[in-house]
Image 1 (cartoon, helix red, strand yellow):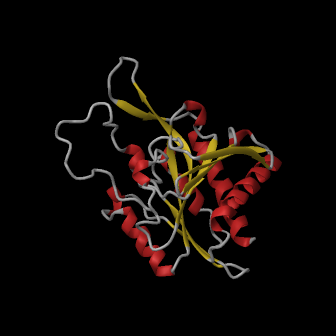
Image 2 (cartoon, one colour):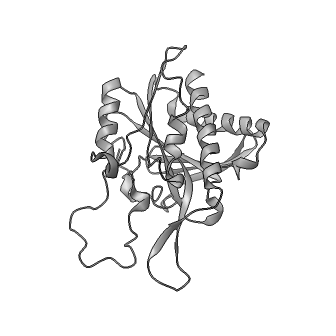
Length: 257
């Protein structure tokens, strides 16, 4: 895969690269979807609104729509490893845990396909780089596809907790919390790349698909300082729990199809 996860803003800010060659919008089960292609990478962005205010029937339709999108990435995979990235102790960063903790139906499925879930934790807690743990787990079960689930950082406030994005570009664990040095780089910035290694088709033993929901946004304080902070909304706990239920349901629906 030539498209670098580092070059995409998917992980730092919710956006599609500017060099998008093809983009079109359509409706899926009543939900607007934007499909974008940038080089060898593709993105599907489903705009759902606030899922916490939907009734049971609407959530079912939404789960079916997400499942239909997942099928475009996982339909040919006999063995899928779902990796829940992020820190489960941080509300805005526990989407991966919210999904994997609900995937109780794992191992060999009735239709012969295999589904496994894995929570590698964060390097700050384990001391082991997340990408190494994911690589070992995928190699151990001979996965055909890795589905990495993680929280994203939005570019605009209306995107917070209201959209889900799928892509095949890979992801950089923890990059959403990397200090923003693009405007004022510190003079002592180390020469080596300070960003953690990526989880992508280039670095893993099989292709990688990512699924993410933007739960935080970068902002500056009213005093006009240059430091940017990560902030979120007051209902993030309920939103993350709801998205975890929706995405886990969609994954099972896709794998059992």
